[in-house]
Length: 154
Image 1 (cartoon, rainbow, N blue to C red):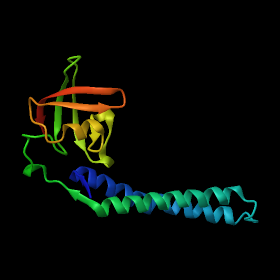
Image 2: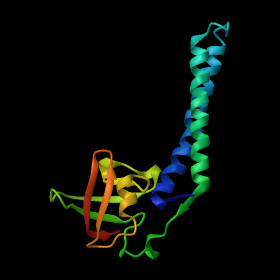
Image 3: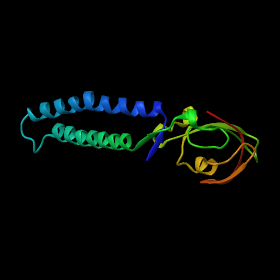
Image 4: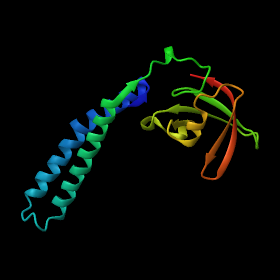
């Protein structure tokens, strides 16, 4: 099951609609054009178009599966007393004093540039269930870090 926000769900649905109604017809047209050029056994354009079609269909199927497994979370029913999916967490590195903030989101909504980290990352996993004032000891590829939760919001 993939937990996500309404916004994330709508983005996936829009992307699926775009792939099915715009990209799929483009590839079908490219295959038809390449087929019209003659011998298919030595037609690199045809092979490339068929490969692109396979990749597109795989992506469409993945999106359909994700959308089918989606569970939209109603943030109005969530409480900001503990860290959970869709909460914005303000943190302080205990060792360096550096402050940071992340919103914990589903895998499909993750975007580090926007401060959105996947619930499946080691940092998010280490923070889930923590309260303001708690210190999370998290193992990351570079070693262990201690992060103090300084704020939780939506």
